[in-house]
Image (cartoon, rainbow, N blue to C red; front, side, top):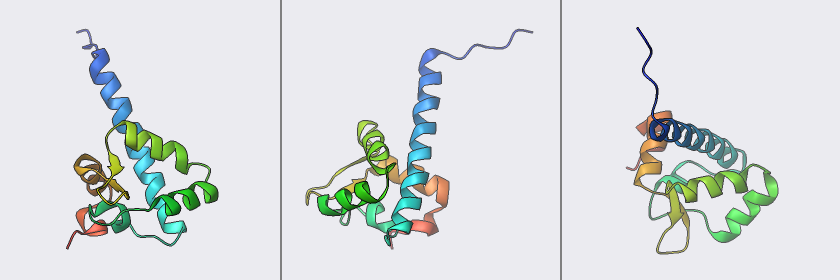
Length: 106
């Protein structure tokens, strides 16, 4: 029996989600190393200021690429206060990876 071929769209979707998950994992690690907690980006009313983002970029060579991937995939954005936060989709992926309790929105 021949194996079903994956469509280009489903293959692309898999790679985007894999890249997002990799970035979210890296972001969680880099935030922790810099003294932040996951709630810094998972709570819509919090977020990282542009100054904090610049500091993370200076401290960690991987930060800028992950931030770019998160923004381009609509997993993160700047909130109404100009602070960098995860979108609903980004939060769902983060909670799927680390569990709701790891970044609880109490």
